[in-house]
Length: 120
Image (cartoon, rainbow, N blue to C red; front, top):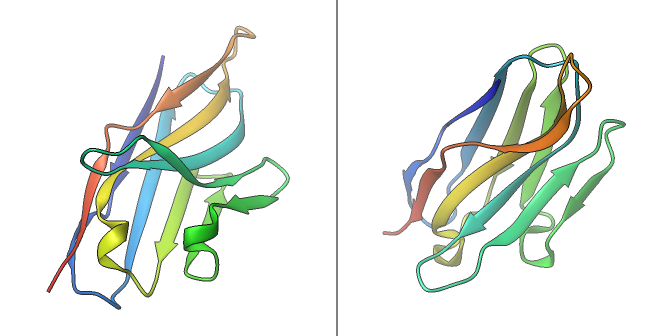
């Protein structure tokens, strides 16, 4: 079994910064892609950023130049550094990881979600 635990959300003023973390634990042989989605009230969930096992990154256009995704393969942790935050970044942020277990099964696992609110 694999568990993902997120931390780092909160309330920040426009222009501020937050750093989200997502730590995986449990029965893990390897982790491939890691990433973050977000869902704002009344909107569909959108993928914000992803990072491959080799370190290649992708971002949705609206966060390019402001958000940076990174990973620590020793600690099985993903990070999302969010700078120059805007009110439209307000959402619940969910991390995910593509995990191979010691038994050879592979699946996508999700964090519990963390609220990010950007407001005066």
